[in-house]
Amino acid sequence: MKSMGIILFLVFLMASLIVTGCATVKDLQQELVESLRKPGENMENGPIETLQSYPSCTERSMPVLLESEVVPERIVPGKEINIRIRYATCLAASSSPRKGEIIRAVYYKDHMVFHDRTKYTFKAGTWTVDAFIKLPDDAKPGTYTVDSTVIYRDKPVKKTNTFEVRNIREGK
Image (cartoon, rainbow, N blue to C red; front, side, top):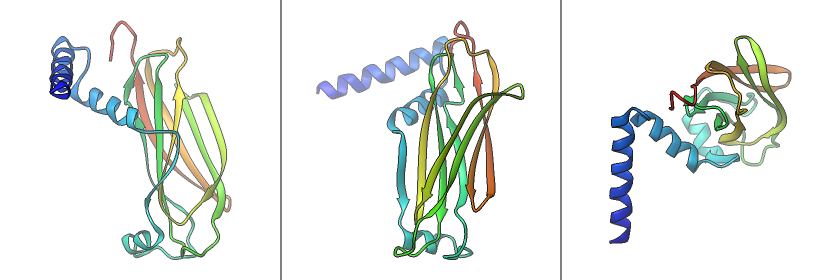
């Protein structure tokens, strides 16, 4: 019974925020998604499932950057964004992992405001890798660009996303 009361309270709170213009359903959904994620890597599919899912994939191929994502897409200064990449490496379970790098860069009006370069071991299967970046309290409002790059054997593959920093007075 107590959990039903909590659920009703959360539904009422979400409806109130939407009605007052403080948040949209998408904003609330993205906050929920972000709250469930943790920094680091997580296997999505094993090596056999990955080989079956990507018929053009071979055991000799390089890791494939399937997608990158930034949540939330709208944020206020001082909060965190989650940058997630999803990659697949088509190796047999007994194969050696592939060594490479993951690079994340955040730009505001063509000026780099954050850069992270991490040596990374790409493993067999389909994986997600999550990183969290806290925005400074004085982050300027506007559109920011995030480049997520996977490098293997000196061959970079990049995906780009954007997010918007809103003035604290504007809310989310």
